[in-house]
Image (cartoon, rainbow, N blue to C red; front, side, top):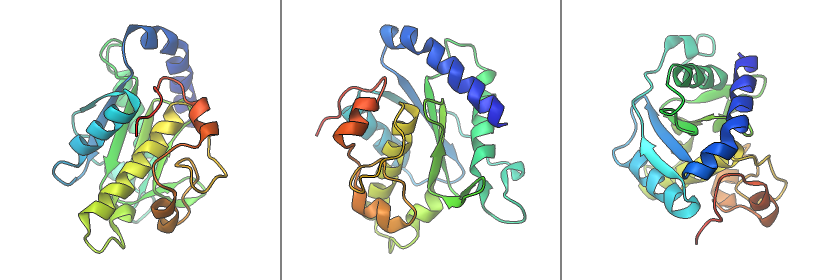
Length: 205
């Protein structure tokens, strides 16, 4: 499965120059399970405004029991990405968006690292965000939850556009080990990470 993701990333990099010259990069936002009304549209508007990405909701990605990490309600993030890549592989090249991002209602677990807030491969094609841990501890505050989702979406989009993790704990690319990291760092790239982005225009305030 990892080899499948590596091949998909290589194919996207090879085609990236042609696609960037033709149009703005397109990001498809997918629901994987119940998602709050308006959440996808709000994230699409924010990412489009700040980074010049053409964002649009895509068809739902129905959760699959095969994604489960053992006998739990947690999904394996790699299995979600593999399902997204497989679905993209069934599309004609001109129909496939450059990137896809799934908003998963449940928690996610990364291979060998335990629960994660999201996952994407650097310069890959697909990303997944876990909504359950972002909602936990918010006290039902919709603004807190939305802010966390936006931080996670920008972080994973950064990976898709070529950014690695960052040591600056105020940069959006700092890896979140705890929800406090997400709340503290905000959704802005530091200057170094901003220079590493490919296919995104400079973010607007």
